[in-house]
Image 1 (spheres, helix red, strand yellow):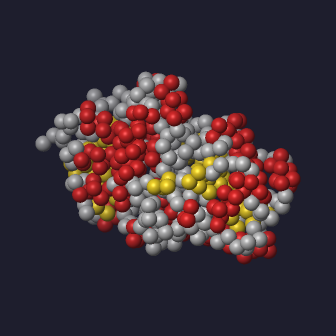
Image 2 (tube, rainbow, N blue to C red):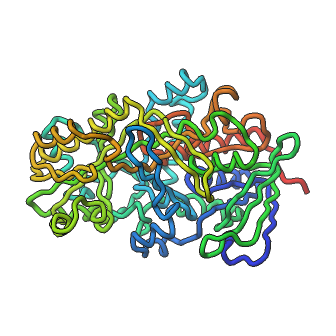
Length: 511
């Protein structure tokens, strides 16, 4: 395979191609493959390192955090106002965050597409336009419904609690058709079952002549005086992540796909200016509760995620069954000393339930001290209520399923042992800043728009007032979508790539 590991390069690297794609995740991989299928020579640049499925599948979760995650999994969105500090998890490796997702595949809800086509004036975006794109990618990734037999006991209790309250549950669809139920998808599939883009997409692009350069930090996109893209330049990183030798890629077509956190920074460093660049960040703030049962749960025995409920979608809340690896869950348990030891010893009896908020987009991405950005985020008043409502629903479900204690994600809060205690704890919560939250779907920081004054890129993904410069990742989504973003990002990236091929059939690097 044509994969260059930049950490081993001792001399400056200079390449020429018809197109360069910055980022090898869900968006970048799809674009690279599509351009390669059209006969273009393509170079993909990935800031992270290359690990094979066998290599990352053998890693402990703590090793995955160090080697595969951006900022070793410690990135956060700094809270503004009455807002939790939110952990923001993203990949930095060959295949990007696709390697580290739970594999959940949702299409963009029709009401969201309707809002984009009306409120945002993006008339070409509707279910009919994207249906074929979604179907094609679902076939490529072998997206299938998770069978009931793959549900862990934690998930079964989640369903039982929902049934008792009249909350319907539905099976999730995932790109892991041969899942073995190891329950550690978010750290790299240990069995090779997940069809992440490093397995399902990039190999074809490489087979068609694409070169992937890993350990490659792109400093800027190069534009001429007429604002035509002409390539990129940057620095190869050594094994410690420090800057090494420089590289330069000459190409008349540049597609930026380095995610909602880093695409704005690259465009800013490249001289792109827009009041919307780095703004409108949405996160889908997620939270989970622990539920302690008398019975042994062993929640790690089964698919990490297999069911969900959109029963409260009208309130902006999605419920999702979730169970991460035991050591990660144990690290997040409340208490200290004997109280903490008691819960760790009872981890086999703990189930975990999750929820996600469909948020408004009140965050920003700014340049910071190093290569990674400063994220700030303020929950809208509406979303603050949704967060508490989600916690209340999860707690009620746990007690309905027979839990004897519920562990709320509230720093310093003791376990609650009754519905009344749950209601009291939420009613007297002094500040949402004490709530533990995580986010996995940062979106919207270079959003598409019908006019230059409304966003950063046009409907076809081209950066306004430039030629040959496109964006194809989650940053172009004009609003929060309320569902997991892997499939939506890939569908829009395919749309952008097909548009490039149709509009620029003769695109080739000058001889």
